[in-house]
Amino acid sequence: MSTLSKEVIAELAEHLENAELQAFDVKKITDDYPDMDWEDAYDIQWEIRRRKEERGTRIVGLKMGLTSYAKMSQMGVDTPIYAFLADYFSVPDGGSVKTDELIHPKVEAEIAVITNKVLRGPGCTVAHVLDAISSVLPAVEIIDSRYENFRFDLKSVVADNASSSRFVTGGNVKRIENLDLKTLGVVMEINGEIVATGAGASVLGHPAASVAMLANMLAERNEEIPAGTFIMTGGITAAVAVKPGDNVCVRYQDLGSISMNFV
Ligand code: OOG
Ligand code: MG
Picture (cartoon, rainbow, N blue to C red):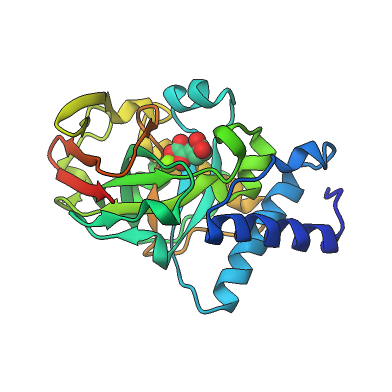
């Protein structure tokens, strides 16, 4: 059940999208709309998606967020959320991320997958997901909450497209049957110094569980994960703040490495 009118949903979507596109921070929206519910929050996110698509932006993937205990405890929240990835979020491996387009970026190491079958909930399980993953690839997400000091509650962050901002993928694409996603290790380095380490099991016990949860959450809106979808399963470690001049390199067991410069 939504509590906000269509007009207010459209207004909040425009407000948050402007903050994203013009890189300024705003108060969390639940300060003014304390009674908004989950459906309102996702309605705002879907309205931002619609606005972008209307202008010709392509949606190139989906992501789960807050799927690891490291992330949940870092942000003080307790439920995973989903969001979309737009074409201009993508930065090539080894490329530059322009910090003047962002507010207060942080980096997260993630495991991404590409599906080759439709996944539809309710009742989507890890078994269905494992059967539908064609390839696995490393991804680094650059998140950039539009909220002041990265402080938010779950509904505010859902509306803000789960802080999505940029992502880098590359490394070595592998077939799922050649990998153990649970024990797959990652090492994140900034300027050559190790800042975080982790393994795939941090993500809901197994990154495939994150994809199953995504299918089941989408089903609540009568949506599915189409075949051929690129999905980032969520940060393995806590997110680390970056500044201009930083070089980030994430090394993945079996999947190679990804790097980028913040300029
Ligand atoms: C929300 C987005 C979280 C992840 O991978 O956990 C996320 C945030 O922490 O700002 O993308
Ligand atoms: Mg993420």
